[in-house]
Image (cartoon, rainbow, N blue to C red):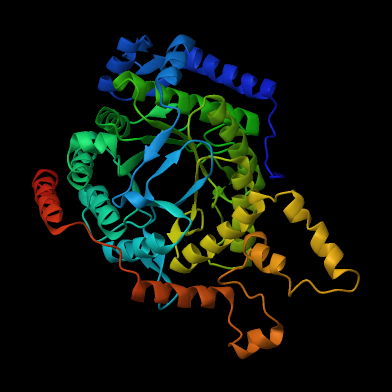
Length: 478
């Protein structure tokens, strides 16, 4: 079957980046601001300088960690029908974000987000066919900072039946999040079998790990929670001003992250990830929708598959501030490129302004863009039936194919039909109200919020979670 795909680094180039990363890890090392993590690395065979907090990781330890890391990972959901496996067979999508701003559905203006906004966001995401994994894309700003990640975890698991991907800033947050997920899964052993939650962890580029974040990783690894090791180097700021050099920094950080996970718990599920980006040196702002970002993520996907580790890369990064033409071309190009490159997870839906703000309208527009990109990536079949020689002969010159059974049979699979985009004549579009895509998306969001009600967490489980929240408040808000 002819199927478009992109694989632009040669095997020699992949080997070169890999070997350069190993030299950085063994020679320069990484700064780890956690004695607990340094002790774990030393026990694994790393050379530790406790005074400078530098860990130098030999190639043999990297090799061992990569051998221990699972090559496929099952991400489970509260509703088992949404379970799926990261196995390089097909990409899945996540929402994007961790923003504290939302475009208000009524006013169109930015405002601080609330826990209700997050719950509404998750209900819309739960409805959309392309969302397999939910992030806490919006921050409940009315909640005290020390409780935000924990409350987000509860909202993620209660407001959608799909897989939840959260984060923790320290080991205490991680333990509470694990306890909440275990209550949903039916216990900690069941959670290991069916991880309804995974967790993000980001090194501090270049080549450093904060105490809280890396100690949270240790907790997640030991609980069997898949950890997404998402690097975030910026070309020319926290990485060299070259794509190749930024790939080396990003890859070295990810390999160090994987080593820490595997030293903490052999066989811990890990996901290779990056949100590497470029910088607009005129303003100092991150360029999320820049073409060089696509190049980096294409290369990083190849590196992940070189290691046979599931990959999660950003495919929906844009710089547009509203759902407009710029958002459309940035999202369309970015998503198509990443889909053709083939990471198992693509971070894509809902973000604006380098994911500093979220818009429900953008969430449903992104779903439409991804449907189109999926059609492109699916390619087409060539066989006796699709060549249709007998049908062409039957219809003949100047004939019409609309009335043929063959047309009815194949139309639905061959031709993508959008749900939101205007594909009718101008007169028909004008008669329907001359609505822009943003207006159509706004109406779609309203419809989803009015009709789509994911099943909540069972009452007895939620009561247990409430007790966990009360304990967390007692400890963290004292």
